[in-house]
Amino acid sequence: MSGSRCELLRWQFEFTWSLFEYHLERLKPEDFLWEPGPHCWTVRRDDGGVWRPDWAETEPDPVPVPTIAWVSWHIGWWWSVALDHARGRAPRDRSEVTWPGDGESAVAWLRGLREEWLAVLGGLTEADLEAAAPFPWPEGSGLTVAHMVAWVNAELMKNVTEIGQLRLLRAAGAQ
Image 1 (cartoon, rainbow, N blue to C red):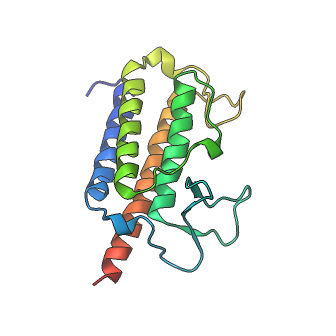
Image 2: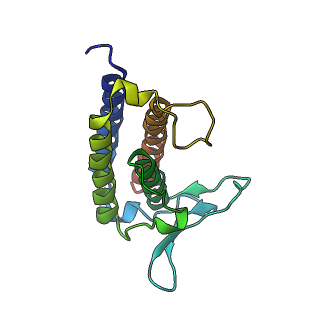
Image 3: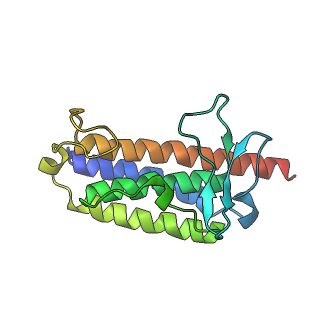
């Protein structure tokens, strides 16, 4: 591998995604809405049949344990907004990003976001990485697109770990 930051960030993303695929391939439909305890955040159908996530504007204490459905919605939300910023589109509001409604559709959605992100990464140059970051920091933060790409990798790695741990806990309890 050359010393290109673009190549290194893409490698890190692909490595994280390979860990995610390990879990995505093993998820069962009933895993998504499994609640690991009494204090959980999940996704619920509203009166119109749209799947909405549990949410609070300030983080509760204690923090609720999320379901796999909630974490998959969370990934879809932040990644959709990161893609909006990276492509120069007006970013979606959190309430505009809804969970697809079942595990198979959620996995397809996440894989689609991966393809979109790969297209963004494939178009970046070293000079692009130096531009001011449009997300997730406020304007004037001094952070760059390289920071945003690294943040996406880190956020994805964290969420992959959460989904993997929830999947393993459910599998261990089902024995």
